[in-house]
Image (cartoon, rainbow, N blue to C red; front, side, top):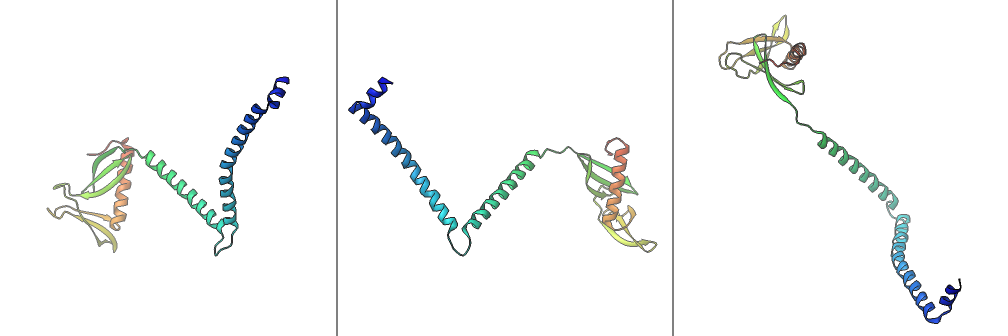
Length: 178
């Protein structure tokens, strides 16, 4: 304690210590004052009067930023989890029409009718044939020999064929028909 008292009582050393303290305080105040001025001006801006409350604008910007961040996060999750699907092509003949499809991860996709003789895609047509009910007719445009008929409109017929193909795939333990 005696040594500290000697240092503080010495005129030169105490002046150097006071100068160092004054420099530190002024440097800290130099950092603090602009920050404090920014805080005070932000407070006055938020509490100011105008056509729209300023705090409401800030709240809307924060909400919009949160929504954008959540959307970007979900997009990143979707992009990061996309995996390459295992694709297999297959075909099955039902009612005289060859149905080609792709098997993607165990699901039937891109199911379309083809002629079993010339392997051309067939455009279905809807006609009234069975008891006054609509039916879908499949006729090959090139060889005109294939004439398959399924009950219902083309979409209903395609769904029925898809169910048949999926059922047969399940029963055959996932082996694809070629």
